[in-house]
Image (cartoon, rainbow, N blue to C red; front, top):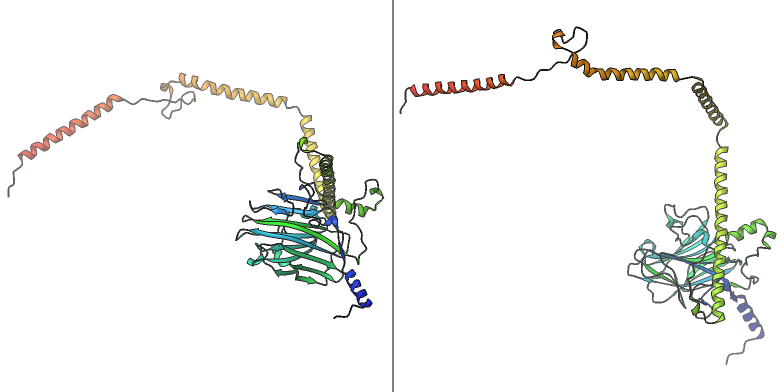
Length: 452
């Protein structure tokens, strides 16, 4: 028989076990408590779900971010709170299925501004962001792979000439049509950063440590040949080496003024966007107080999110106006002083010229000039009216051979063609031709005959 463990061995075993103990952050997790993801199949508590060209479905055990049909759809789910722990581990269970040559991609995000910065974009359509993106797709014509991208907010992925070259780590993984789920694990600790898939290390680095306060999110996109991406769970946990603390809660409006300005700005940036509109329900479907309370709670929560979204939009508008104002002010300040002086002098010269023209127009009386112009027009009009009468009264017998009349007036004369002369000429030609024909016939008859 084996000897029983000593007290010291048990102590070290307990210490080793306790050092590896972890607890789940409920507000940043789903799919780990019981068989149902959602209490009402409408929303995930603490998360915001949205889609493009379709509405992502919440089933009892999974979330369908992109359906198997139709194609060209997007779906995303974002945590409403950021993580406050410096050491954490996130495990995502997903499944991808579709046609033989289907294409699509799945992104796991850990970014600063959450859904406000990313929304439903993929790594190929997103602009600038601050944080991490893990991409699961079929890059390079392979069977599939996982790649990691880091950005500090200075690189615009949407306009970059080669987004694929920005990856800092990758591994091959055939994720489509496996007939089972895949487990992607992300670990951030003092020892570094690592990514594993199905308990196999994908890539890691001891030079990367992600900051706290960032937001988790998952987005999926399918192309014309669609892939269906299903999300079974997202579990965030921390070790007990970090003092246990709940995720950052939003301060009340009464205490917001007591918070420093930079903390208030950070809080405003984390305001969630509005959720999907809740459908109307018939009152007869609510049979007890629990259902009534759940319906009222969901609608009040949706209204609160709508208001928060409005405040967030106003904040973004304010920042945009401030940026435009700063940009215009900077451009004005960069204009040389002599160019401004030259432009001012030109404007003053134009103003003086306009004033002189105005005084000249207002000081002169143009009534006499207009009267003379009117008389001249009337004279021209009268001369044109007398032309037919002059032509009718003119006689050709008073004109000299060069068509100049004795009274120095030009007379136009015309003559009609003489039809009698024309008929006489035609008849004379016909007679001449007949006579010529008779003479020719007579000579031909009198000519000697030649016989062979």
